[in-house]
Length: 318
Image (cartoon, rainbow, N blue to C red; front, side):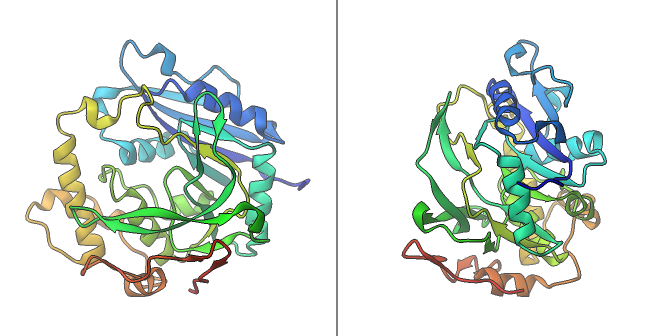
């Protein structure tokens, strides 16, 4: 294990989720160096959501806001970073419904070191779990384009390595996810979260913005964490509580299509503060499309399989 692991800020946006306590307890329990971790939680709660508060812990900082004022996950993550981000050099952005493997923290930083790239970001969709602790069989997952949804927004899927054939090093990737993203904190300072996005489009816009600012992506080459993807979770989603969710999503779609496909929206309100949350100048949007094998204007996926036979991955180059 590394003897010089830097301190880590774990950022969790929590929307009325009773799994938050078990997630944070497991996070610390499974860490090799829990003393090096600080957790920041933005909890969006209603008055009777006492079981959805983060546990009391000296290394957990929680801000509680009225769920009725929330504008969705991107707004919540933006607010979280503005209010709780400290001096830690690294950040792990994750969700309020997670489980972790032993020594996940040290192993994650060692993976980052293996990339030999100061602008490396490690991200993927973790394997699933069912509460309280039923974990999926181990495999290695790498993000790939899944489909363009009805609004023309790219949605991801995962390709998979058989666990016994896991690579020796983190795997070059074209995308980042919102539920497991490990990076130097400077990445999210240079490319801040866009609070005017709603839900769909969070990940693909963040991927393009980070990449065009010069950041590179890798998938973990071993299992570190698990995410609860189940539909019957007992936790409400933001859109279950908010009548304006559809309107927020439509404004977000206009913003995404302007940024990635160059479409001018009819409602200019959808472009509020867009200059603060645009693309970088180190690499071009067209270079991203060529690397990721997608076409945002045509809404086409040009290559659908990145992992071949569970063993070989197409290597992306900047």
